[in-house]
View 1 (tube, rainbow, N blue to C red):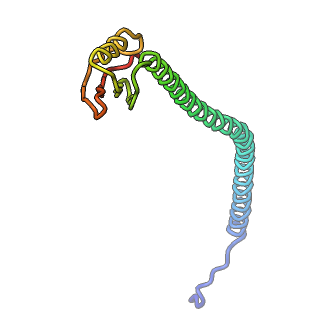
View 2: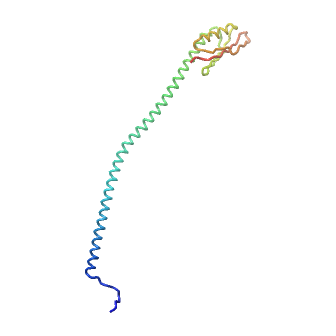
View 3: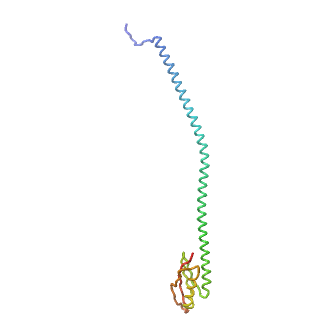
Length: 175
């Protein structure tokens, strides 16, 4: 006889092998899924504990970073204050020196009339009205003998309308 539908029935052994293969496949797939769930659960738990530790360390380091920033800010402010203090000290000492120069010049120049005094850095220029040449040289010698001035020289000597001499003396200050 000829086979018409090409359908073969399976015998019991083949049916049993297919059912056995299906059950073993289901058990293996279930075991693999369970294994993946367990592995991913452990990894998730490790990730969660690592995140918690990171969060604890972050809060600690945030406090340290804030402290470091505050320290740097205070250090910068201290440097600015030191610079201001140095500036104020130099200005006050310079004003004190200038006041000393004026006091010295006032004591030296009792007989002569002062016109201008220019002090720039360590240089000084004095313009005074003297009665005669001897008074001008006496003024020059007193400035040379003073502890406040050095390298003193007469720069100009002119006679004004009243017959008095206008002397210009230049020198350096001793700082």
